[in-house]
Structure formats: structure tokens, C-alpha cells
Image 1: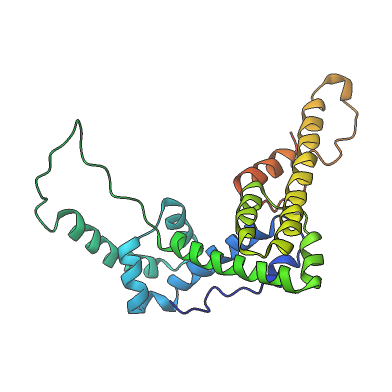
Image 2: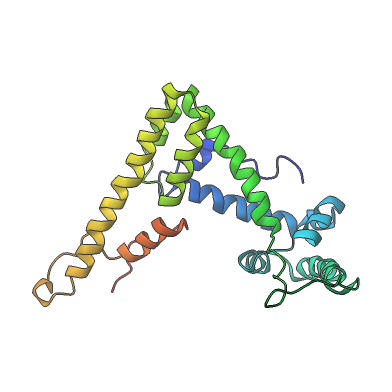
Length: 232
């Protein structure tokens, strides 16, 4: 795979200041990879070897089916299915002792998941470098709406790669962005629940109408791009 296919400037990810920037990063990586492998790269031998070997998880089979031309997907499947058949049935299976059941299923692999993980690691390293070197980026980072729970923990672990002088304020800012939003969610979800009390029939919903969707996005690391108008 070309090294620059998933290149995303860190500032591009942080400029919107809406939602979790790392969720945004994952979405962009996922979309670029899906477009890439169902486009011109479909016929690149090194890419085809890897898609044949790794296949796709259920989520990313759905993704390429949604974004790619059907012929491209069929051609990818044609060679992948041949490899699956060879692995599953091409050679006589060796006799093995079974201990109370059938052998374990083959481990699930996915071309997109694997490449997202590699590129995410590179982008997080770039983020840490910017944090340590550029005050302007530290300001941009602090202006984010929030960091979801999973990605806050990811960045806390990554902080170990920073010098101690930079790691401590970075970790504190990561925790602030995640916890303060969590507390907002708690208040909004509670307010949403209270609006179902008949005594609050004419009360103001405030920011609670989409509290369910926002809470799930925070907990699952999936971008929520609603307009705040979801109701009961």
C-alpha cells in the first residue's frame, strides 16, 4: 500500500472542534481505505494479496459494499473466495486429537482494521509531536468539544511516549476533555428522564433531546453527527 494513502494532517482533524477528533480520524481512515481498495488499488498485486489473505470483518464488508462499485467488490471476492477455499479445503486436514469438541474457528482478520490500526498509531505519534512542540496546537487541542472514553484512554496510554514534562499536562488535558463532557452527558440524560414526569410537561428540554445518541457515541467511539433535534 502506498504510504501516503491515509495521510491526514492532524490540524485537519482538530479544526472542526465538534465531537471527538480521534473518532473523526478513525472515520476518515476507514473511508479512505474503503475507497482505495475498491478503486484503482483493487488491481494492485500487493494490495490484492493482502485482501485475499486478510479478508474483511462484517462491519467492513458492509462498508466496502456501501461505497464501492459492485464489479470491484465482486472481483475482490472472486480471488478472496479462492484463497478461503484453498485454506479450508485445499489440503487434507492433519489428524488432531479433539479435547471435547471441534477445533477453534479461524481467527477473524480484516484488511481495513489492520491498516487502520497501523495508520492510527502513526497519526497519534504525530499528535504527540505537535503537542510537545507547538503551542498553537496545544490551544487547538484544548478547544475540542470532547474526547470519547475509549480514545481518552488511548491517548493517556500514548502519553508514555512523551517526556515527563509534556506528558503530565497532556494527560491532564485529555482527562479534562473527556470527564467534563461525561459530566455534561450525565446531566443531560438525567434531564431527559425527568422530562417524562408529568410535572415537567411544559418544561424546557434544554440540550437533552439527543442525550441518548450523544451518550452512546461517547461510550462506543462512533461519531454522532445529529442536529440535536432527536426527541423522545
